[in-house]
Amino acid sequence: MIKSKKIEALDNSSVKLTVSVKKDYIQKQYDDLVGEYCKTVVMDGFRKGKVPPNVLLRKYGDAILAETTEKVIRSSLEEVLQKVDQKPIATSVPEVDMKKDLELGKDYTYSATYDTYPDIKLPEYKGVGYEELQVKVGTEDLDRELGALQEQNSIVIDKKEGTVLKGDIVNIDYVELDEQDQEVPGNKREGFVFETGSGYNLYKIDDDLVGMKTGEEKIIAKDYPEDFDFKELAGKSVRLKVKLNAVKEKQLPEINDELAQDISDKYENLEDLKKDIKGRLEEYAAQKIREHNISQILERIAEQAEVPLPKSMLDSELEDQWRHFISRVGGNEAPVLRQLEAEGRSKEQIQDEWRAGAEKKLKLQLVVHEMIKQEAIELEDKEIDERIQSEAEAQNMSLEEAKGMMERNNYLDFLKYDLKNEKLYDLLLESGTGKKGKKVKFLDLVQGNY
Image 1 (tube, one colour):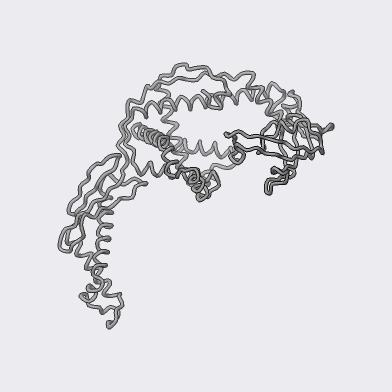
Image 2: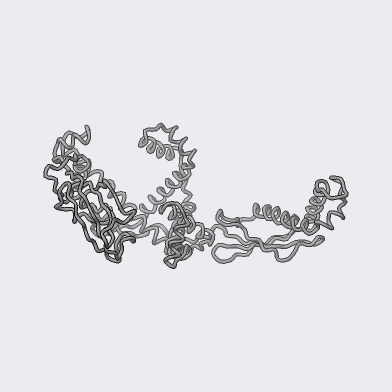
């Protein structure tokens, strides 16, 4: 079938594959199609299966030649791609260039362009330096966690005096008024409940409610800045009629041995609870510090690595990000596109803004994959089972149940991918040269402020 093939490297891990197909193979494909249609085509004046080839070709010759071309390209390209080392990656569909029309009695040459897996050149990746953040879990961190537990175990009761203070839970009716103090249709809520001071309300009227008494009504006038959080109110002046239906207050339990025992039977006293909280926070801090160390190492390696990123891979990543974005804002693309158009923007402009981040993400992934390959990192069944067992215990499942669920949901490959990455990260950290970095408060570590 194949007379010759040639691969030419292009930019960004793309290649051009030129294939020449033997004329005898082409003739056979053509003859087979003619014979098949002579048996099946229905034409006036002829019984089915009795149409002479010359009559068939007078009417359908061009169509049969076009179908022959498609069949020859499809079958020959499939055969060549099975044998060449530079195969198309999953995100790339070969783009065929038919330089000239196929002619019977002649060899036929065409080319196909597609993206291949990039040839990645890594720098020396062992012994890379990094700075380890210095974090200490302090008294303020314990107090913050205890305060959260105190909130979680609070009870809400009707307030005797019925006067709103910051931190109280209010039940209100409200409606937006126009310039003539008439109600604006669609901007009315009844029985709306929130905690004052939380900001969990569209109009941000927390402070305006302080001092109101149960049953009281008042009109609140608000002016909103141009950069207000909610665009529908940005730059507007609004008048709200508000009625306070009810006010409740939270009663917080004392932070003592009794609270610790209420939280869990495993705590005999408050010190047990504090010790457990501190251990949990220190474990979390250690994990975040490890992630930061790994991130530094990988970024330094990726900066020096040569990674010719395939265009189709980047385009696919940007499309995935777009789909996730649409999913987060409701799952309907049409209104998002209309809103962008109203703002003078487009999907393509949004993706251009994402491009640098997507390139960095893909480059890091490819660099990690290449290091795993070079280090020949493999997993033992025991390692996989231990991780599955850990996740099974967290979900009160048996090992077999968890493994079956993962296989059904195609999650097992992701788990193996993570385990290989972790083994690589261990290697990089062990070979790396760490030194003490800056001191960071635990809360700043959690919030990424470092």
